[in-house]
Amino acid sequence: MPQPAHPAAVNGLTLAQAETIADAALAKGRELGLLPLCVVVLDAGGHVKVTKREDGASLLRPEIATGKAYGALAMGFGTRELARRAQSMPGFTNALSDLTGGKAVPAQGGVLVRDAAHNLLGAVGISGDVSAKDEEACIAGIEAAGLAPDTGDPA
Figure 1 (cartoon, rainbow, N blue to C red):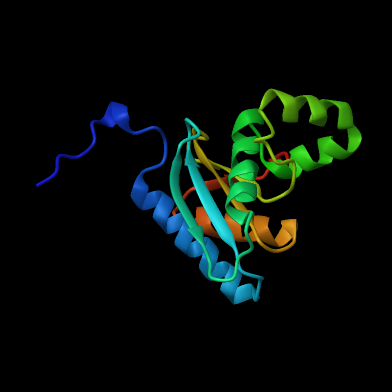
Figure 2 (cartoon, rainbow, N blue to C red):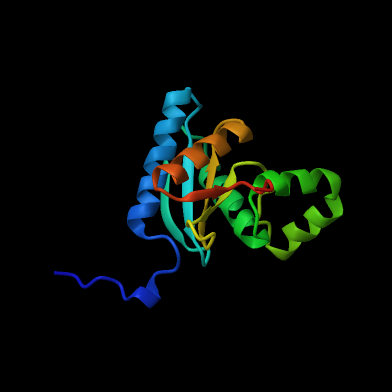
């Protein structure tokens, strides 16, 4: 029987939590009739825990979803706020893109995952439909796992 991971080796989200988030987010997408989605769940260290790409999702959806989650982690707030800042401070957005090697995507649909004590556990990024709908699916997935979504809006 495999040994469980040492608690110090778990960097935020567990695989079970990440799978719940991804599955519930995709279910929300189907409920809303969204275009085919790709969901990426990253742990607090920015490592991929789960990637799921629905049949029919276009070519770059995994990279875009990863970029949304990565951008949220990189800045410490959800990409709803990052998208607002991109509009008002394009120079900053260009610098962020340069600093991250183009990895951060400043579009709504990247949501931080927090526990009840507001500790950062990871981030979820979704791409496939309009950004606001992608974010809605992120939130549903995070809440289905009993965790708190952080979109970047003040509480």
